[in-house]
Image 1: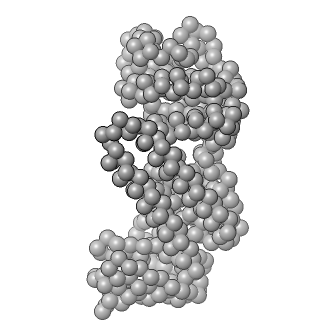
Image 2: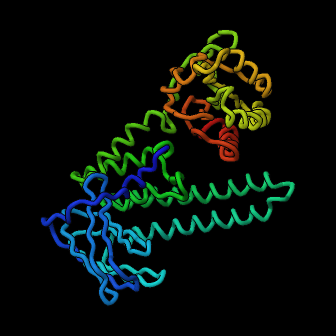
Image 3: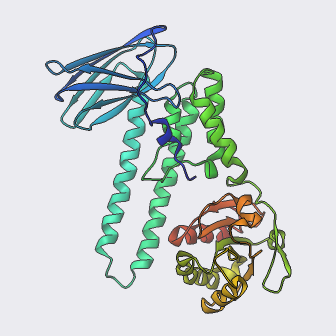
Length: 380
């Protein structure tokens, strides 16, 4: 997914003070921060901000709630944390130095559980990263890197299972939104519509049932509608394109094989740099029902002879081991819109049933997935 929905949830816009209707929830804080305490409502449409002065280390807010709501408490030194407030709760916060304690809020306890699990995952990631840094000059560095990547993905999969179970056990709480959009790095969500469509649809269903007036519903629904057609497990869109001899090649010709569709162009330097890696993958796994189909976006207006440039690049990069197709129509080729990408190199990995199992994977991540597929008979 190119956009992280959780990040969209916390784009906060100043608006009017909190609605006067509803039932009260109080927040009382004790802190060593100075200045103001800021309370930001996390909502994709109706964000709000409230500010109160910290006096003798204490601050308080009174909320008028219609239902459980997500908030972020911020301070002038840049520190912040999230709370999940509900009707009738009396939330007590103790935040001094780097120690945070929150009581009186069931939803916030759930958020803190999520945070603790994520911290453990990040600590594991950092430990293997540090180990790899110490091995950077070793001859078997690439082997060790792949091994550690597999270790991390094993731990990541365990965390995914935790999040899925959390979502199942907390159907009536908006804490599911935080679980759904946890991230272990910039543009690195743990759950994605591509791989975890069922969980996204489950959260959407539960929001509609328990919080029918929530503004999170429309945004989540739009995200699912946009990315579902190309999500993992969906049938890869069929196409037919001409090869270098103007003979038609179709996606369906590869039924029964694990296939990597590689979108590239002769003029794309990052694409050309990826080509040696594709050769190694093909050499290593082609005997195990793995193949590559390269689709070129040559044919831009700046190219005087796109067909020659395309064919020369194939020969120069020694890519003759697999099929190459192109309309020689640049970005206007119909498969670009069919597969909804905006930059190259771009890859789509398809299993033996013709289902999408990965998009834009590279390096060790791509090889790990291919290895998994061919080892399991092509099944994800």
